[in-house]
Length: 461
Image 1 (tube, rainbow, N blue to C red):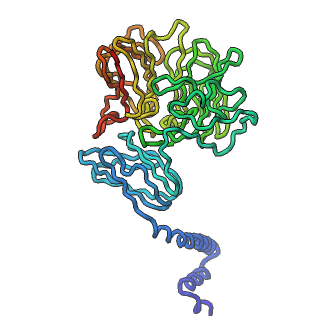
Image 2: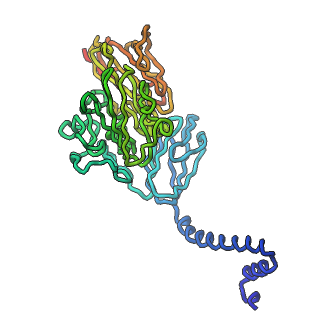
Image 3: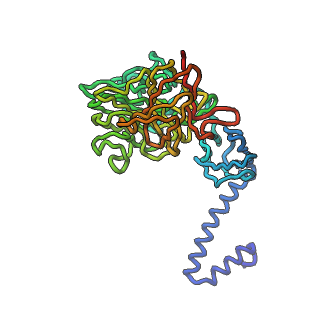
């Protein structure tokens, strides 16, 4: 009776179950249960899919338009290469596309709420953000430190409160202390030292006996790379690049690092001769620094010259800003010059940057005719080699990877690879605005003029 009154599909299923052997019957019942779970789920998601919107992002003139897009979770985005000169693009970051020649498109459905960053792997200065169910980042030049997902167990309840405001590209001494507050955790009150006049700042330190103690807070920060272009950067003490650690040969150095990032990490002291346990490689020389935790490094400054420090947890962290200069002045003295500058060359998800900024936001360097100018070039990468070219006068390469050259050589263009450092010296001969830039054209020029890896040497009579 029940077979004749049940709907046909269920009657057929019942007959199949009654005819099947016990093992087969069990498998069939498992399938029925799974189907009963999936079918209601499909019914729940179907109305959302039906209401989804398709958005188009044009890739044209070496830019994504719009470069910031806000949509609802479940919406679809179609990237269309509209270049007319044969340029191929490929999307990387939170999305991965195949190579896209002109006319090709790439579609992605943004299923989950959040903020998604992407860039072109061939032209990393081309960047974009998709905000799904979230507000777009506010374009503010002053970075603000994002709180960590979990509070740091190391924070002292007696630590001094943070000053009002957030450290920006040039925090005033009244806002940012020049020495770390004694006894405080690095992220309680991130400290910065003097502005170096090139877009970098010194790291502040305190003396504990004969040990120079530096404190670094790793956090996610809204960072304005160029006017109106704001990236979700990873920073040391709120800035890109991180503060320059400058010590003397033979100094005892202690660096206390706090991780306020949403992911684990570590810090490597690139080029340093130090105990293996202090080298900063997760799972090899130390455990990961987990979110909310601190880790202390201690070593003696033996490797003189121009070096750098950086995250050692994937190039993506370095590309977002986790790097800084590490300068060790030899006992016999630094390279003789009237002006000393540092340029840290970046090409990750923050775009093409000198000291965390893309032209026209890069900081001009100043000099007078016939002054001796010393520039430290640091290839932070994380991906590319950059031929650095100076207009108006050749320069001498006097050191590589911190080591002074027995025979300096003279060029006007120098390839700087990822991880390499060079010290160059030159004397301007004519007043005016002279370019220092990467000579790969797509890294420094666009259809509307200079962009990316460009800065100006302002030479006065």
